[in-house]
Length: 157
Image (cartoon, rainbow, N blue to C red; front, side, top):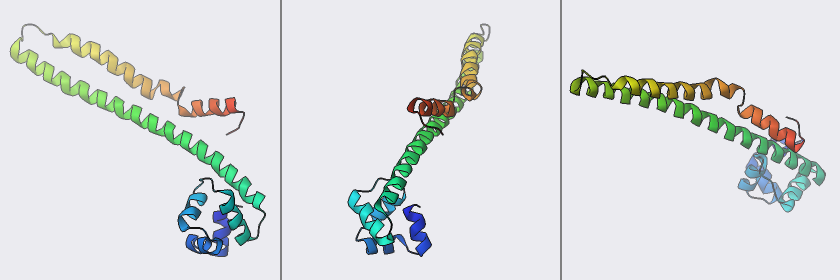
Protein backbone atom coordinates (compact mmCIF):
# COMPACT_ATOMS: atom_id res chain seq x y z
CA UNK A 1 0.00 0.00 0.00
CA UNK A 2 1.36 3.45 -0.85
CA UNK A 3 2.27 6.04 1.74
CA UNK A 4 -0.46 8.35 0.51
CA UNK A 5 -3.12 5.64 0.82
CA UNK A 6 -2.00 4.76 4.35
CA UNK A 7 -2.01 8.45 5.31
CA UNK A 8 -5.49 9.04 3.88
CA UNK A 9 -6.79 5.84 5.50
CA UNK A 10 -5.83 7.29 8.87
CA UNK A 11 -7.32 10.66 7.95
CA UNK A 12 -4.01 12.51 8.27
CA UNK A 13 -2.79 15.48 6.32
CA UNK A 14 0.72 15.54 4.90
CA UNK A 15 1.70 17.95 7.67
CA UNK A 16 0.41 15.56 10.35
CA UNK A 17 2.42 12.70 8.84
CA UNK A 18 5.47 14.95 8.67
CA UNK A 19 5.08 15.92 12.33
CA UNK A 20 4.60 12.30 13.42
CA UNK A 21 7.60 11.06 11.47
CA UNK A 22 9.91 13.99 12.19
CA UNK A 23 10.18 14.92 8.50
CA UNK A 24 9.31 18.11 6.70
CA UNK A 25 5.98 18.40 4.91
CA UNK A 26 7.89 18.98 1.65
CA UNK A 27 9.71 15.65 2.06
CA UNK A 28 6.39 13.86 2.52
CA UNK A 29 5.01 15.63 -0.58
CA UNK A 30 8.02 14.57 -2.65
CA UNK A 31 7.85 10.96 -1.55
CA UNK A 32 4.10 10.78 -2.23
CA UNK A 33 4.54 12.31 -5.68
CA UNK A 34 6.93 9.50 -6.66
CA UNK A 35 10.35 10.96 -5.91
CA UNK A 36 12.65 8.51 -4.15
CA UNK A 37 12.96 9.08 -0.43
CA UNK A 38 16.06 8.44 1.64
CA UNK A 39 16.35 5.28 3.71
CA UNK A 40 15.98 7.29 6.92
CA UNK A 41 12.82 9.04 5.66
CA UNK A 42 11.21 5.76 4.61
CA UNK A 43 12.18 4.12 7.92
CA UNK A 44 10.59 7.01 9.85
CA UNK A 45 7.37 6.73 7.85
CA UNK A 46 7.35 2.93 8.23
CA UNK A 47 7.71 3.30 12.00
CA UNK A 48 4.79 5.76 12.14
CA UNK A 49 2.52 3.41 10.18
CA UNK A 50 3.88 0.35 11.98
CA UNK A 51 4.62 -1.47 8.75
CA UNK A 52 7.70 -3.27 7.50
CA UNK A 53 10.28 -1.03 5.86
CA UNK A 54 10.54 -3.37 2.85
CA UNK A 55 6.87 -2.68 2.04
CA UNK A 56 7.61 1.01 1.54
CA UNK A 57 10.77 0.38 -0.49
CA UNK A 58 8.86 -1.88 -2.91
CA UNK A 59 6.22 0.84 -3.30
CA UNK A 60 8.96 3.44 -3.83
CA UNK A 61 10.63 1.32 -6.53
CA UNK A 62 7.28 0.80 -8.27
CA UNK A 63 6.49 4.52 -8.04
CA UNK A 64 9.90 5.35 -9.51
CA UNK A 65 9.30 2.97 -12.45
CA UNK A 66 5.85 4.50 -13.00
CA UNK A 67 7.37 8.00 -12.89
CA UNK A 68 9.92 6.94 -15.52
CA UNK A 69 7.14 5.66 -17.78
CA UNK A 70 5.11 8.84 -17.19
CA UNK A 71 8.06 11.05 -18.01
CA UNK A 72 8.66 9.14 -21.25
CA UNK A 73 4.99 9.46 -22.15
CA UNK A 74 5.05 13.19 -21.32
CA UNK A 75 8.11 13.72 -23.52
CA UNK A 76 6.38 11.86 -26.35
CA UNK A 77 3.24 13.97 -25.91
CA UNK A 78 5.23 17.23 -25.88
CA UNK A 79 7.13 16.14 -28.98
CA UNK A 80 3.86 15.34 -30.76
CA UNK A 81 2.33 18.68 -29.71
CA UNK A 82 5.41 20.53 -31.00
CA UNK A 83 5.21 18.70 -34.32
CA UNK A 84 1.53 19.61 -34.72
CA UNK A 85 2.22 23.24 -33.76
CA UNK A 86 5.11 23.42 -36.23
CA UNK A 87 2.90 22.03 -38.97
CA UNK A 88 0.22 24.64 -38.31
CA UNK A 89 2.82 27.41 -38.26
CA UNK A 90 4.24 26.13 -41.54
CA UNK A 91 0.76 26.18 -43.07
CA UNK A 92 0.10 29.70 -41.76
CA UNK A 93 3.43 30.94 -43.07
CA UNK A 94 2.68 29.32 -46.45
CA UNK A 95 -0.60 31.21 -46.79
CA UNK A 96 0.69 34.58 -45.55
CA UNK A 97 3.84 34.58 -47.69
CA UNK A 98 2.02 33.32 -50.79
CA UNK A 99 -0.71 35.96 -50.48
CA UNK A 100 1.99 38.62 -50.17
CA UNK A 101 3.88 37.19 -53.18
CA UNK A 102 0.71 37.05 -55.28
CA UNK A 103 -0.03 40.68 -54.42
CA UNK A 104 3.55 41.76 -55.22
CA UNK A 105 3.55 39.79 -58.48
CA UNK A 106 0.22 41.15 -59.69
CA UNK A 107 1.15 44.74 -58.78
CA UNK A 108 4.66 44.74 -60.24
CA UNK A 109 4.77 42.28 -63.16
CA UNK A 110 1.26 41.07 -63.98
CA UNK A 111 2.35 39.80 -67.41
CA UNK A 112 4.76 37.28 -65.80
CA UNK A 113 3.15 35.05 -63.11
CA UNK A 114 6.17 33.82 -61.16
CA UNK A 115 4.18 33.19 -57.97
CA UNK A 116 2.67 30.00 -59.45
CA UNK A 117 5.95 28.07 -59.23
CA UNK A 118 6.55 29.24 -55.68
CA UNK A 119 3.04 28.31 -54.62
CA UNK A 120 3.19 24.87 -56.25
CA UNK A 121 6.60 23.77 -54.99
CA UNK A 122 6.15 25.13 -51.49
CA UNK A 123 2.65 23.59 -51.49
CA UNK A 124 4.17 20.17 -52.18
CA UNK A 125 6.44 20.68 -49.16
CA UNK A 126 3.47 21.66 -47.00
CA UNK A 127 1.56 18.57 -48.12
CA UNK A 128 4.47 16.27 -47.23
CA UNK A 129 4.94 18.01 -43.88
CA UNK A 130 1.23 17.62 -43.07
CA UNK A 131 1.26 13.96 -44.11
CA UNK A 132 4.27 13.16 -41.91
CA UNK A 133 2.56 14.73 -38.90
CA UNK A 134 -1.02 13.53 -39.33
CA UNK A 135 -0.82 10.37 -41.47
CA UNK A 136 2.54 8.62 -41.07
CA UNK A 137 2.93 9.53 -37.39
CA UNK A 138 0.07 7.14 -36.60
CA UNK A 139 2.34 4.25 -37.59
CA UNK A 140 5.52 5.44 -35.89
CA UNK A 141 4.26 7.59 -33.06
CA UNK A 142 5.46 7.82 -29.50
CA UNK A 143 3.43 4.83 -28.32
CA UNK A 144 5.26 2.65 -30.82
CA UNK A 145 8.58 4.05 -29.54
CA UNK A 146 7.53 3.45 -25.93
CA UNK A 147 6.60 -0.16 -26.74
CA UNK A 148 10.01 -0.67 -28.35
CA UNK A 149 11.79 0.81 -25.32
CA UNK A 150 9.85 -1.46 -22.98
CA UNK A 151 10.61 -4.44 -25.23
CA UNK A 152 14.34 -3.64 -25.20
CA UNK A 153 14.34 -3.21 -21.42
CA UNK A 154 12.40 -6.46 -21.02
CA UNK A 155 9.44 -4.87 -19.27
CA UNK A 156 5.78 -4.94 -20.18
CA UNK A 157 3.52 -1.89 -20.36
